[in-house]
Image 1 (tube, helix red, strand yellow):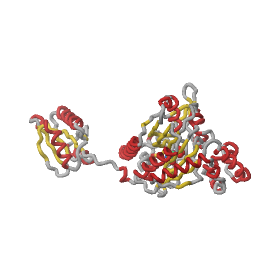
Image 2 (spheres, rainbow, N blue to C red):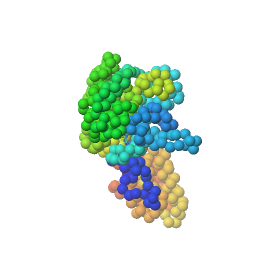
Image 3 (cartoon, rainbow, N blue to C red):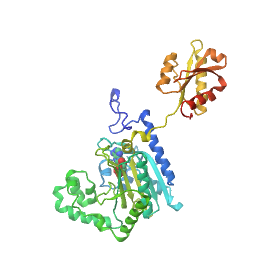
Image 4 (spheres, rainbow, N blue to C red):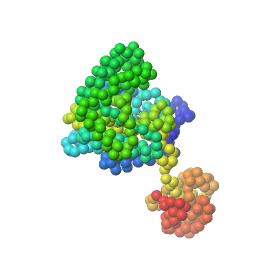
Length: 443
Ligand code: AMP
């Protein structure tokens, strides 16, 4: 799975990882890096620049930005006081921080449109399960200063193309519109009217939300709330002309891009700040089980103003890295095989001199871009061979006192066991040649 490498044995002496916060061991890290690098490359191709924000912010940012009544803010945030008594929160998502940075650095003064992407850990105190963690990772993108429908479609397409580029073939895109201006308010009234007579059948949380934030009832996972959802009024029916036109143009642009999607009036998204276009991408293959949402996003035209900036349209999305890694076939993120060379030192008489020479030769090869393995314990020769085999080296340089005295070393090809003496100053050239012959160029 690539993300629960720590699983299994608990740490010794009572020191263990926090449940839902996982290590990624070197054997698994290649898939993570491949995914992250592919996302970066794709975003750069779409004209986005990377933003890195701190891991925590003042709690107020998330409370005001995401919404007090959302599950994320009400139940899942990792909040603590710093030494000065200020309330800080580990970021549960990336958008609020990006908006804060956009405001703090007065990016709007630069004019034009800002296109940012991010990659990094997020924290939510959820019950850990497959695909649901307390520290998880997201890749995401945000666009500030463009209120038109084309950028919405472009972002949906970016997210979907990225997902499919990972070999996730059964991804499904669903889009909806939450309208703008007072549409959400009118919809909230319509929902109140629908849910009030049914209040007793709702979960306690949702009973409270009838007054505070009835849209959140549609997002609830409680069984009793899900059961009443089908009869609820549909927001699409309340869309004003402008919102409807915006949404239609998003859909026709997606058609033109060949991005498959479905209009689904029941999706609402878990955070309060959305308006107009929203979308979700799920994996329908069953691999993810209950946690099948790969990501989603939408327009949040009111958030920048709500956080103290001047009214600026904005749109973004985030995808969950762990879920992408679970859903993506093993082969699609396989790291390319890297050919490598081992360096051995063998001599009992002058071990320091020979071992230092071996280190220097390893350094020289590495400077030339070659991957070099060296077992610096320098045990018996067969131990050093075993190490080379374990790490998959293609060849080995054997350094011994006598050879050093004669200005040469032995170069052994590990698969054919062919061995030749090589002059000291020809090592890099010879190793490069042998590695190229064994399948791929070094570096
Ligand atoms: P959200 O901002 O809640 O829509 O999350 C966007 C995506 O992030 C989800 O679709 C998941 O792929 C991922 N995600 C959200 N919460 C978690 C979590 N607790 N553990 C793992 N992935 C998550």
